[in-house]
Length: 93
Image (cartoon, rainbow, N blue to C red):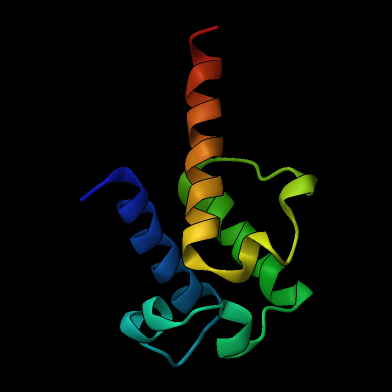
């Protein structure tokens, strides 16, 4: 399993747990866009951001807080992976 796939799996768990959805991981993975599945409004995005920041020990900058980034598990995972990589690179500077 790749690092991005692992991140996606953890994000799926965060979405189900923190947004208190009555949905399976398979349903979430099969969804094209999250907003089509359950409506990613600003409150849902905020709850998800807090869950992701706590889970991955990162800080999501305000420029990442767009509906476009939070439309799919894949796009969220790509940005989380990038932030984690940036954080790791900062350690070695």
